[in-house]
Length: 635
Ligand code: AMP
Image 1: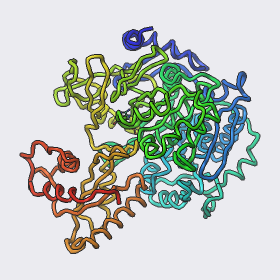
Image 2 (image 1 turned 90 degrees about the vertical axis):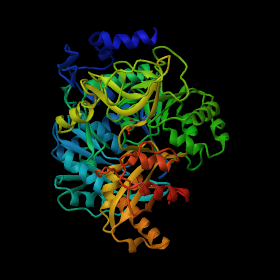
Image 3 (image 1 turned 30 degrees about the horizontal axis):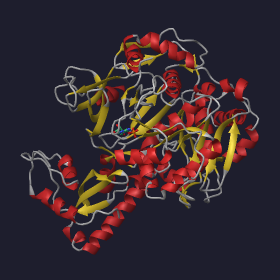
Image 4 (image 1 turned 135 degrees about the horizontal axis):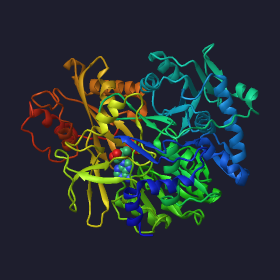
């Protein structure tokens, strides 16, 4: 079938198209209402259907493939390697579900999962889905202040965590960060379930903290049936950064998500039941939710859960796993490939990669040299795909499962089924239909199945943030600039808001600014994303000290920079740490006091800062320019 016809049908014969896709998953009650869009922009997909994500990911495969691998755990940090069959996974998930029930969790309760990459994290996600609880996984790289704000927003009954993670052989204790987060939060979870990996000592809080190993003994053989839930029942909340410092809880449904993932596995990733999928992301990110946990399992594939770096014990580790487990589809991020690029390319040909059909890359722009290096090195097609935490699955890519076609370097591809993508003028909202016109990438409603339902607990914020950016037109804004070429391929040109993307991790500059500004010696600060050859972008901070004497010498500046970085590490986590903190006497602002972040960013990247007629003090940019002429090597 021609891809254009397939896509057009998904829009103009929306209900018929998605009713067909709905057959890719199991329902208790087959939906008759395909899309209830009576209250735009809120879409209620498969509104009268009932189903269960865990049933679709685990139970429904038991008759045919109970002895087949489902979850393959590999940790190059601890040396652990273990395969769980679908039957094993079914057992573990039921036992975790029984434990959560014993801790008082019922349908609709939130369970916050703050875990390293261990199998119990996957059991906990699936166990929540099994009993209709709503999970909220918080990336293990986030620290106490980030975690506390998520605890307060999600108000979990139970938190599932562990003693520690490990990165590059270094143990990263989680429990003290969690304890501090609970201390900082208004809402206190009733119970904390802890997996003790034996990596770091834990002090248990009596009455609150319980050990997984002990409860596992009691509930090891428990049978917990799946709770059938409405298709629109929330399956999870995943927090992401936006323009304000307050993280947004992206709320995802159940039925629409199951269908969207099943469709994406078929049309985009071409995954077949019985094969192995390897996604190198982390369960704390959307890619991990969709393509480590739910997507491959729904498709009946084995999924690899990998804890470790791509270069330890050496830069061949991923490819050795492809050979060993006969991986057919692999998913990673451009930054990881740029890391591998610094190592011997012989690693790419050292192992038998004959099982591998394609490498999928997402999360940040994929530059042509990186794409060529890895495609040539592996001798495999590389498929870029563009999406967001909000959408849950690719917006733009190439659907080789519908019609095989060549991608185009620098472009993630064309709109996927159900996405009515438009390029809109940023201020008039007018649709830009000609080739190579720059506009904001927008999506006309309804968003397809699997996309965010709302902002958790805040419908108004959902409408205001995402659907109110274009005059006279209610369209979803991706907050990304883009252009489309003559043939309909899109190119992404960066964010329209204050979100930055460091090594594929999405961060809000406001959150980092708030953390830095909490240092008693800092009067004000601006954080911008600056282009970086390895990480795509890094955060650069420009701070004004409360007292000029505290930054009077280079030594004092270095000391304060170190203190600020430590503070960001402790509050938000090392992922948010700026590459440098530089000190200025004044920040570039408009006369009305608005920070000119874009001008700062342009100067940092050696570009023309554009129109400066509104700037209060032009010398502010000169200070930044001269600082940037010194080294900006990450500190
Ligand atoms: P996240 O919600 O963390 O997945 O980040 C989503 C943002 O990452 C998007 O809005 C884009 O700015 C960027 N992004 C994701 N995938 C791509 C891609 N393939 N090409 C360019 N930018 C991307």
